[in-house]
Image 1 (cartoon, rainbow, N blue to C red):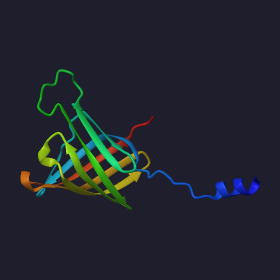
Image 2 (cartoon, helix red, strand yellow):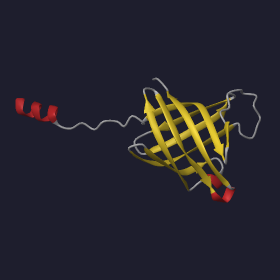
Image 3 (cartoon, rainbow, N blue to C red):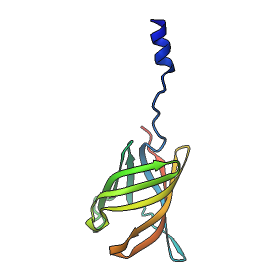
Image 4 (cartoon, rainbow, N blue to C red):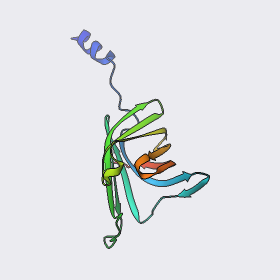
Length: 140
């Protein structure tokens, strides 16, 4: 019995990668050509949910009276993470023109903060820019 207990206590336990969790967007910056500008919209709330294989993001207007076209958006798909190289494969999105694109980022996690920086490029829409997003981990 002691040998079995020793075996299980020494067995390598799978640890959850620190990126797994729910994150709330707290700032966003876009760089196009030589111009940098904030794209964070305080009238909206966005969360990103990351599990061991997939990511999803949900963005909605805070005010129930918001009637804008960007009142709600959502997307998600599979991702890969190797060290700080984080790649999202956008399989689903409110705007179908964005689907089936791959977005590569460098991520850094420090405490309860996640920063991702990378190129957002969608050829058929003429989009080619660098984005930097900063998230805070949502506490349970």
